[in-house]
Image 1 (cartoon, rainbow, N blue to C red):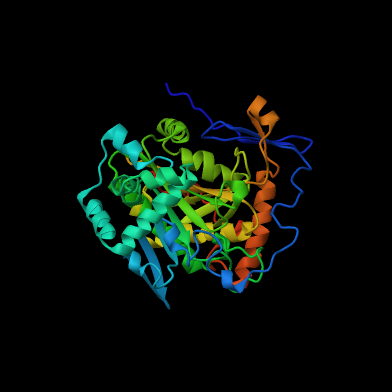
Image 2 (image 1 turned 90 degrees about the horizontal axis):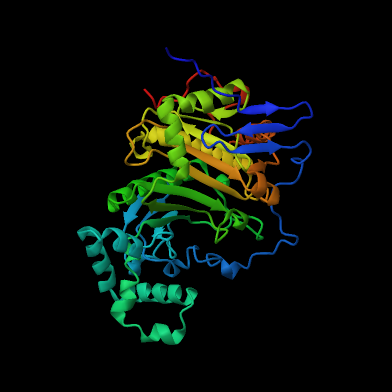
Length: 441
């Protein structure tokens, strides 16, 4: 005889206003104590510095006039008016011909290097990638570019000028294998500051992009994830994330996403899979439906929903795809655009001065169970300290209800200005129908 097991109440509001939360997938315990959330969230320099006109396009190594400081490009998106084009493997002598709206380049310092995959799995460059490498190096501009980036990487790694000078050409080029067949990519947006910026507080973030630009950014990243899986058959998962501003882990305050192919699924995925196998509808029962019943819904459209998350170390907005397809690259263009529109709106409501992490979660390549593509937008507005380390109870300064209200008020204003998608249904406009996620069908 089956015993009915009810989902626990993941949110408990005590009499004094303390909110205790439990993450349904990881078991993370979070408390929000009254009075700790009414603080400014964003970072503002004490003295904004004016931007020098002659530095335009040179503010960091990701900027458009410094393309030769990053490894050889894998692909780019360029725009001519309303027409967007994707170009793959742009040769070095054409890199500076026109600015790219978004570029996909290898990370100079990979989390898992080419040597890791080669030594542990016998991974080799495919014939196609090896041919691209040879073609790039066969051009004088390409060879100079690769050698300059290799030498810069070696210097940054602590190698002296004498040590670098003693390396042979072959040894230097061997260090560049990851530039062509590596598994850690960066998707870089064109702007460092918004168009027309006059001082260094006017950074270009995901939320300052137009709706259409953000759609291209997201679809380009989805395509990059699929390409990493196709490039390396030993990869079990591709981690996709975005660190915005240095307190959230960004090396540069320049908009970019990262994709890292890894040979394990990771603890969080394994924990989630265990819950999913016990209840195939867990993402509706413990996420979407629960958020709806507790009035945590922020916005929705026909292809995605967004709600204030619970049980996270930081205030977190959760965006879920409603597609029947588990894999992002199997979504229709309309479904990807729907996810993009919600994510863009959440970034715009968050604001460019709030450090945040964007974390993607999707079904690993070797998993058969259906699970929805979902994105967590985490506001890095607190610092973990001794209490958290000693108790594994995390203090989150903004509870889900306050988070929902803050974002909703911003969304109404942004929609009236026309900056976000006009078909977003916000707060009480949401249908809140049971089981809105269709992944299990």
